[in-house]
Image 1: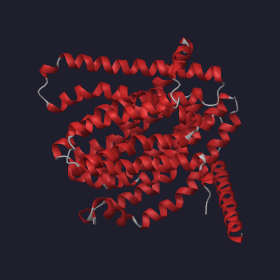
Image 2 (image 1 turned 45 degrees about the vertical axis):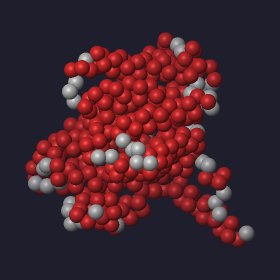
Image 3 (image 1 turned 30 degrees about the vertical axis):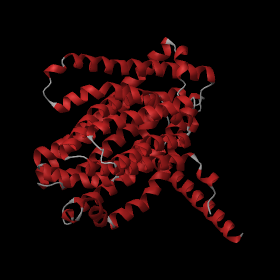
Image 4 (image 1 turned 45 degrees about the horizontal axis):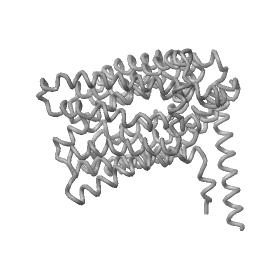
Length: 447
């Protein structure tokens, strides 16, 4: 048996946290599809598109900056950073509230029920999630993934339990879902405050120069985040325009299945970013380089069996997720193509994180813009040549290589390294990891 203590490492807990949020999100969506009418489900997603955009702006502006400036700092500097983050996050939330208040003044002019609902709930929903959101950034910087896991269980787990209860009582409505969303945010934020995880009192220790530094960094990370969202959604717009909504439904299946790559990727990027920030804040650039090469190299080799398994069982995965009607479509082969290209993900993603930690967010922004331009051109060219969705999938490696080359060229100016060094270190660390765990397993069996 594996002891609980051995499972309480940051990598396992980060992975578990991302798996929990993914599973609970799927369960919650499945329940809502069954409990609400189609128009109500559509209205719920319409509301989430507004709050999701606001959260993306808030996170894009401050989440990476919090980790970069706070991780590994002493108490005095850390309080100054958190106080400045609290100030900026509060001001940004007040800006959203002001926009919401202006919309309230024109409420009588809205004849769209969906927009009326957004105006009613948008502002208070963002306020309810503010303490929880900032706590999440702080815990990532502290690498305290056990608390993150528990907070995610409180937030999403409580929502799923209450939805099931309301369904059992036949009380599940769209209005109750909006109340529930607000209430679970409040509950999670209150838990953060009760356990003194928010560090809200540091707002009194903010400093103007720190606020300016974080804002200067944040404007580029925000631009990069929004550009990345546009990059991921550009395929949607192009497919809908060129091939129609039926093709989009097929194309989205393999994109959803790519979560098998994204879940471990997000987990290790989170732990790697906080470790890099801690090293950088203590002026240890050599350690930053070591973390970059180790994490990206190990993940590259870790992805090989996942990719191989996905390629073999692609049809089964498509059948499970989409049903029999999607068998025989392009979905399985596109999934296989995505998996093959994903071998480049670890180096590219950690390259971007390292650029942020080295205070080069502007390079990341330019990189994402270049990838967006290449993606649009390659998508149109691919569909024009192949006359089907395979043209979209073939464009993917050109986009990935564009980002990889730009990031690699910029990072090498600061931290000299080669792709070969990454692969050599990754293979060495992977062998050591497998051998050490195999020896531990043999030792436990011998006992």
